[in-house]
Image (cartoon, rainbow, N blue to C red; front, side, top):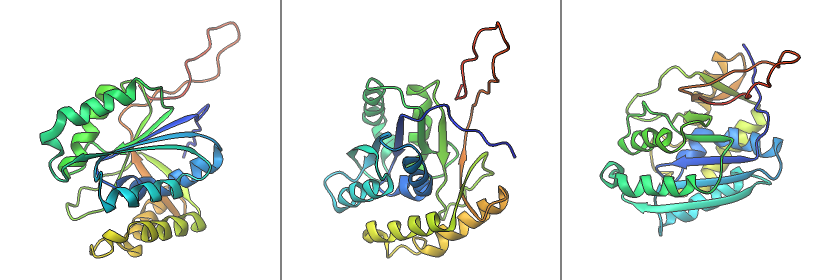
Length: 228
């Protein structure tokens, strides 16, 4: 299996429809990236939950999941389960973020996600960020919409344990949900680990990716590694 590393990682953009989506789908990845790239600038946009306990939980959780990063969190007040009906406001928020810099990596929901809020946000991302590396995270839920991933990030046991502990610590409002427990998060991570020859992993979906090789002497330098 081929391993690819970005040339640089100065800015990460996190996108979620609901508070906890980002941490569930990519919490271990965030822990690893923020420790590997100290001082990375992380911007998070969450479409629902503003003014509620959910927003408080999200701000606390994302701070815990991005150690050493320069973090900015924006939480909007779109109604949960009704994001498609508020498409214009969500798109305007995404477009406003687009004017504020070029992220090296975007983590957001996957386009095939069966939840209407997740899917709507995923479909918006390439309309604002057409040439950026975008990884779609996955969330295990009742709809049974898991698909075969295309990108894996192996997680060591201590990192997965830390992720699971932080989810439990920071999202107390979700503890009564039957799927929100350690077995769910560890189980999916174990399956994805098997698929990439690791003990545990988080997995993602990428729609387009360009590869480049070292330039031949005398030729123009290649554009680098990233999304198309």
